[in-house]
Image 1 (spheres, rainbow, N blue to C red):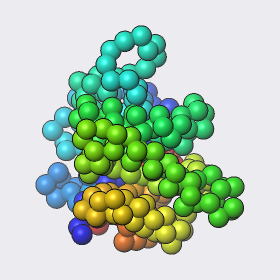
Image 2 (image 1 turned 180 degrees about the vertical axis):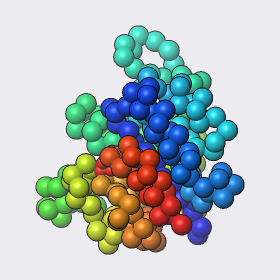
Image 3 (image 1 turned 90 degrees about the vertical axis):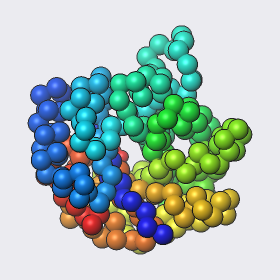
Length: 259
Ligand code: PEP
């Protein structure tokens, strides 16, 4: 099955109006012209810069993603939260959900990640749903168990929805081993492939068509020097890029490594 690769840049809590302008212009001038691009490219800045980036990215074919979304669907008394329809209104196409930093620092549970996924889908956003194990979980041989549990929570949320599992076809998944995020320690291509195949197999056991078509990105210290090998694995469909997405040259080189 031919799956269009995706490379998404997670800027985390980095940026300023001036730095963003120069980063976006560096990325846009480094990418192949829109019609020749092989990969889908998405940039995910902090919330406050989304509207400005939407203008900069207009008509460029580059997607715009938020780094989180409120699980509640509508407007209401949720101080500090941002609703999915608001993200759509300002031009977002994607949203990262369940990033390991949200899970670890803000106590996001598997169940909450499932609810956020549904809310994002209902607003027409493409969720980039992150899963991944801690180092001690990998060392204890529990990687599949942990990733399976995180994924099952999302599948349960979808199955409880009238739309059922069909929503999963509109999701992108990201395998991000926590021990590889921002550490400079990357999973080997074989380690990544093992978990990606596990994720795809789990989905295929529920729905063969969706399992075959869903994109599964790898994230965790992807750099220009290791991207091609990782993206060359059969079940790795691109990357979620943190640190290296803050340097236009590196990010563009990582996008080029999908070819
Ligand atoms: C991330 O933020 O999702 C990430 C993978 O970060 P890094 O590429 O810096 O490891």
